[in-house]
Image (cartoon, rainbow, N blue to C red; front, side):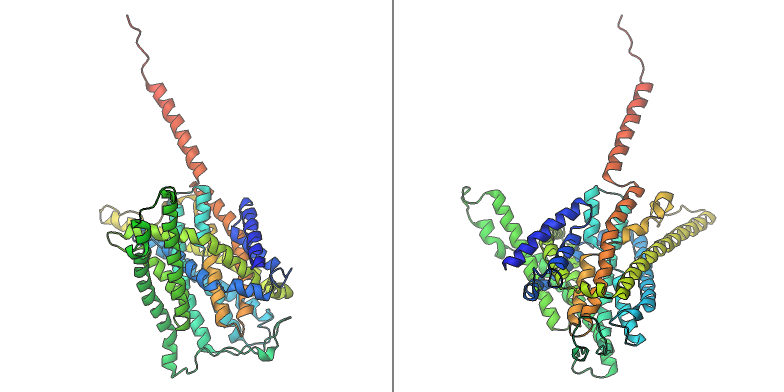
Length: 505
């Protein structure tokens, strides 16, 4: 326990150092876990890393709740077309480009080299789906750091959350179909890996039944996750503020010397955060044992709780945000440090082709984002032009443009793709869930390759997003400078137009 605590302390300090370098804290957590883990300096041994990884259930559950809570249906209803078009384009292009890139480089990767093309296609489809993910937490961190506000930033957040909601559902379906395929990876070999004869894929269903029922099983798993997620979200709305849970805090007559009002508030917030963590992790664990997609369940629960439309809905949303905000720093520290110590990065560096594959997937995703955002921009602007021409011929008043105004600004329209790069919690959570699902077979090899790609996106994403915000002119410094300039111009005009004082007789 002392070693785990010491490693977490070092990871926390490394995260702060990375933040000073204007890089995400979780990069420091991952690096610390990898360096101090059992495959490097071995400060954390296998038993310690296993204890740290035992917290994965709670961490993944809270990450799912926090990701779902970022989905604001009110914003989506206000500007549906730009968000949906951009989400569809980025998702399709990301999957297609990364999948095709992996079909080229995948056969050379060590754990796939002795296998057939169908094995490469299966892993490539998972990597392509994973490429859709974008980190809401890192996007919000950059926005807060730069005090950025405006239509460009709002569009990025809306697309980010919509994409993450979509990727969890698609990845869940993909994993279920991968399990259904039941491909044999036992002939794979990797330097330092287990004996190939012992690496046999786990049969996820003892009785597959007839083909029709087997094909519907993944769909039923995802549908059940959505259904139970809605129920959990409604329950969370009640659990975060029930009288029966907080009666001791609300009704007891505290002595001011014993418990101040500030401590009283902290106690209530702590209880609410603990309630969210326990309820979500319990549901996650139960879903894992009942063949229901657990991460999707938690994402749906977070979205449901944050978007309930009733008299107390706003209060529930604020309470949920407060709870997840209190939990996420600790969750990120533990989860990403554990991920760094458990993911086999040594397998990546042991094979040059795996390193090349990770870089190729990273570059393919960047290429996809550039072309996807350009395609979406052209589609939205072209539709507006056609609508305006039709309205002009019909002599009617044109409706408001469906394309965001920044698409028509030369300085902004070509940097939208830079705001879509970063991957973090949700992507790594999906990787870990897949690794656990196929732990006895190819899960570890897949997790190592996918995690390496995520790290590249994690390092390149925040600086690119900052550049895009500056190009859009929506950083806090730019707003303050613009406000000061406007104030000077107003004062100058007032001085020039004011009439001279008339001397008194």
